[in-house]
Each structure stands twice: as C-alpha cells, then as structure tokens.
Image (cartoon, rainbow, N blue to C red; front, side, top):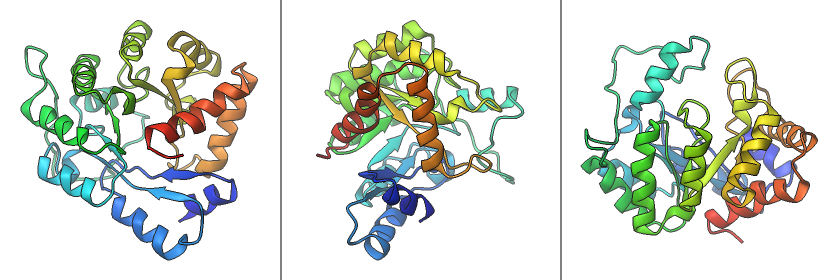
Length: 267
C-alpha cells in the first residue's frame, strides 16, 4: 500500500511488487480493487520460482500466472549460484531471517549445459502468457546462456531480461552484450548502487549502458528493503544520479517508461 500511494503521487503509470518468498499477484489484485479502483495506477504482482513457494513446479507456476502474475523470475534466493554468493558476502541482505529447514538449491542446467526438464517446461508455459515478463533469476552465466537460447527459440526474447547480471550473477560485460545482441533485455537496478552491500558506481553503470545499448536496457528499482527508505523516492534519486553521471534524459525516459511498458504490453 505504501509503495502504491507513493507511486500514484509521483505519477507512475504502473508498479510491480516482488518478493523472493511469496507470489504477490493476489495481493496486488486486492489492493487495486479495494484501494485504487478509480486510480490510473496499474498494480502488478509477481512470482519468483524459489523453493519457499514451490520451486520449479509447473503447477505452482501456472497457478501464479492464473492469479495474474505479470513478472516471473527463475530462482533467485534458491539458485545455487545465489546461495554460494551470499555465503561469501556476509553483509549481503538475507531474504529469510531464520529457518528450521534448509531447502535444496536449484540449478537450471545439466552437466551438458542443457536446460533441465523443469526449466524447459517453465519456459514453454511462459511463452503462452504474452503479457508476462520473464527474469533470468540469479543463476550462473552458463545457466542464463541456456535460458537466453530457449527464449530466442520460443521468440520471447524481447520480454526476457537478465537480472542485474553484473552483480551476484557476475557475468562479464562481453557476455552481457552477447545476450543483449540476441535480443534479450538487460536490467540496470538502483538497488545495486548502494555502496553498503553491492557497490556499482554510476560512471560504471553509464559505461555498461553505452556498451550494451540503451535500446536493450531497462532501469529497475529493486528497492523496498529495510534501511533504504521509500522505494519511489530512492528510485527517483537513482535516476537523478544517473542523469548527473551523463546519461541523457531521453535515454533514462526510454529505459524507465517506454521500454518496460512495451514489455508488459501497456500503452
């Protein structure tokens, strides 16, 4: 609710809410119907295929899509690559405070680099939902390679995006550019420019955008965590810092408004 009120006041067209540990589509639908029925603001929920919400289950995925999820991520906090990353970075924000169960990590490819049957099935299902955007999740670059190739095979690469591939995923700039050249979208996130956990200086982000190409990038907040303040205000500050680093205003508008709207099937 706080996010939606802030976004409405700021003149947003739409917001999407993400959580690593539950699908938010039903919640978003309820908030829209009961609090923003007369507002032009569109409110979307999403789903990340982590073990806490069913993992790579095709039945769970389809259920969340039928609830109205407009963004779906492949495993984030359950990805083997993510777990290995956070174990090495003690200060990195944890997505679960305490658990008595240690869920198995998820890998999306077999020993030959091919998608697992579960990952392949998920991509096939997602291809049938044209207004849903698809995030790579936090797998290793080799896993995302396989997802990108499947997206191209299915003709859905223009609504498939690589999650902040320069952080956690730790893909090289050349590898990121390779994905972009295949037609997928690259996510540049405000949350990875907060120096206390994932430093990614604005001049470096500008260089990445210029090398990859504005037309292949989107700007995303990835905010809302504790100690980072209001996500709408913080995202606005991020955009201003990006502008001050030398990214033109029209490029920022395209990556923030036009391109995400096109991916979601909005006017």
